Length: 458
Length: 65
Image (cartoon, rainbow over all chains, first blue to last red; front, side, top):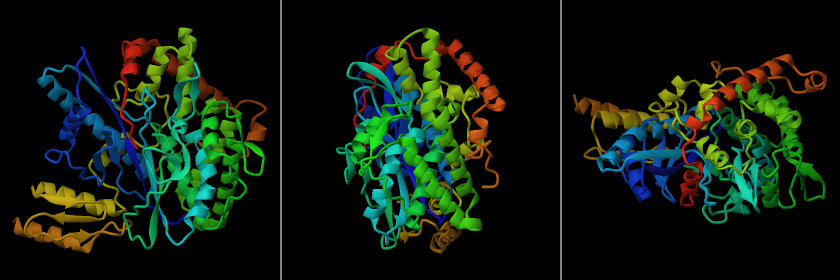
């Protein structure tokens, strides 16, 4: 595959559960969390020395944007590093609250819905070429995004018309449009936000807000990896025709509602297909693309397409074989076992609690992590890699320039200004350095700046 | 990438021959997983937050992006 930059932006849910009833503005809790993360810089948003960005997003959610990655594995690791950074803030924030006489615990959930029907997102961004017809490409991507939830969905227990069901996706019921520029009102399958954070003549951004936040590393790997492969193959002319859906918004909801994966959705030409059949069509095109790439295909692309096919096969015969790999299957499997053991129904409040607690980032409390500890969950990354990514940027993209610069400025105790595409050391050496190439992991002018300051500090 | 942990991937297309009798490896894996989930469920009451209903009801966020 041609090189591509991608990233994930997770909005987290946040709640303080006091021992006793106390009203506490969310802003205050968030303030204490950020104190631990980025001393002295709250409330402005902040970039970290791993190249990532943390900020308070719409609706008072802490949001972590991974640094720009060009390797899938780096992205999976940096997405997890965001969870660990937030988890690490909890003890200090709780201590600050205690000092004010507020005893209780803070919960941070990496999910996409609350109990009232509000939603917050996990956005994916993919750098793509601007010289291609964006609308033609997105038309071919929509059926893929509608059906991707059969492996990328994080699972959701939801009460609809008086009955509680298990849904594949957290986000699917909150999607109202095919394409839109809004991220907060009429949420869409394809969002048209176009901030490439790179040379805008060459690149644009594909901004995807339809997906769930994943706990499973393998689900993240598949979600982003298959999307990148499908995007590449369509860009390279391996088009997918005839999959257009009559009503994609209805289809995404209908598919989410049926964990047996038997639901058929209507295509524009009148045929009725299952999500699996549609995914198989994309996978077959990806196989053809891979064959055409021949020996130039990298190992990740090969592994990914093989794994994708393997997962689709298992979904077709026995999804429960994936109960150690995909979030919705892991979650449903443990809930099924719980319901059988307790002899209760899907509407038991403890099942709703499990649905929430699965996404708790605190590892000695979160259900996903307790399953991981019991060896129920398969992993892609090692914990050492994740811990390292909390402070070390990906080494092959612009994030390295940014991260190393921030680390240097902090060590020298110098004030600085940083954004995705530029950086500046505040003070007498005040000069903004543009870093427009996200693929470039070094910048001569930044090196000179650092060398110059290092000398003057001697 | 070379250090990437290899998953035990089954080749697509092998299914037809395999579907007649369940793969013993898969069966063993499933059995082990069930045991581990049972272990977690043994202590699930301590693991889950108290007052499930109230905890869930109180989990209200403002809409995000």
